[in-house]
Image (cartoon, rainbow, N blue to C red; front, side, top):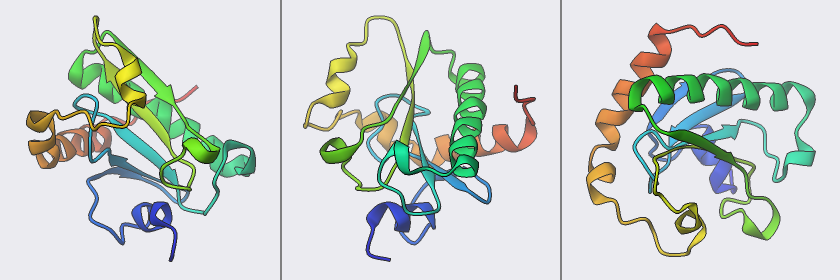
Length: 145
């Protein structure tokens, strides 16, 4: 696979996978804005939202629901931002959705700056975060709407 996003979604690259099903793979962002920052990647190659088939789109949004519930319960953020960047703004050239826990006083403009977040403490705990979040998701089967 030539697409880096596809390689991530199929775990052909080193990732911290917290949830997957037939359609999506959910991994911790390698440069997290906050602990619990997850990327949802479809397993089929698509670049933009308007290319998602109905089943994949449903799987993406169901994963976003599950992850949001888990992040809220585990990390107690003041809110969760869910975003997707398409076209020239997508650094992976593969559709992916961010689920980002946020806390009062955080300026989300930093999310879109080119410099990495430089949160070395959170980055150093990616393995622990993965274990915690994956176990939580496996243990809790959230009822989806």
